[in-house]
Image 1 (cartoon, rainbow, N blue to C red):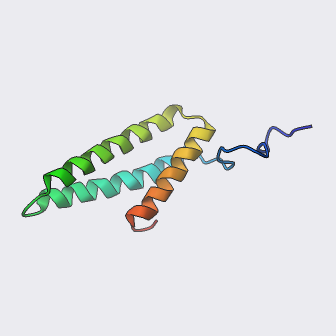
Image 2: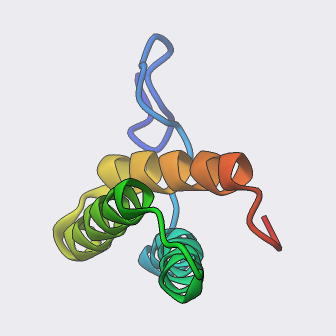
Image 3: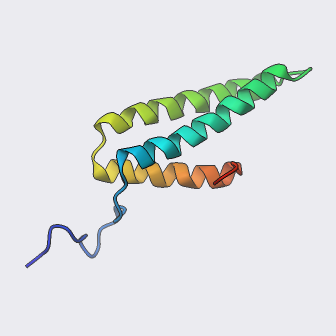
Length: 96
């Protein structure tokens, strides 16, 4: 008999679950990184308009994903958390 608490053997979904708070914090750290970069670009003597637009678009996407956490199920929450944890590493965020 299959135990519903254990993942199916061939599942491609993340097998670990994360709490809303953990996922919210992880996405929030990426949002903070983009916020710092946007501020630094604005304060630059010669702001790069294209970079600024890209940073703002990425920031907006992160905010939308963080809002999605409110209604996300366990699998989606785990996927978002994993994606944003990887993104933190890519961005080289302090504390990542």
